[in-house]
Image (cartoon, rainbow, N blue to C red; front, side):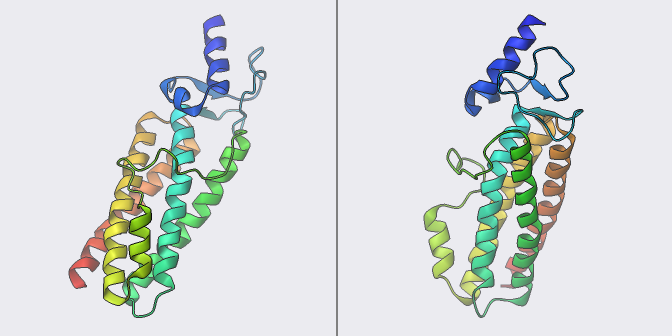
Length: 201
């Protein structure tokens, strides 16, 4: 029990990058174990909830990922001459992901963590667009803009699906796992839709 207390205390004070290496450790709220309410321990959304390092990483990284998807959608929604189906898809993505951002931010608040999205460390296999990619989408018009949006969003969705699968494999919190499954299912379907739209444009 002494070792377990030590590991939990370390996990609450070290940077997230180190916390990931301790993914096997979970936070259990409710104060049922002596001393576990000290050392800056995070409180999950309910006494029975568990939050491990994989849950934290998924939420922290998915917030800016979603924020960029919403930005991409807003960009295409603000253009003239875009295919109606592409516009509808962009609106669908925005409508789905904006509330998910708010949900994930509320989780971080409940866990005692910062709710501000941070893209640092992203860019390797996560599907995030570069500044150049975003600038190209902003500058494009009509059919070219629609094509860029679809191609970029497919890559973006593929990154989100990989992140969601990691959460499904390694996460502990039931709510976070449920969101990861929803993201995987929804975005897999949307990729198929986008691939079909690309054949039409």
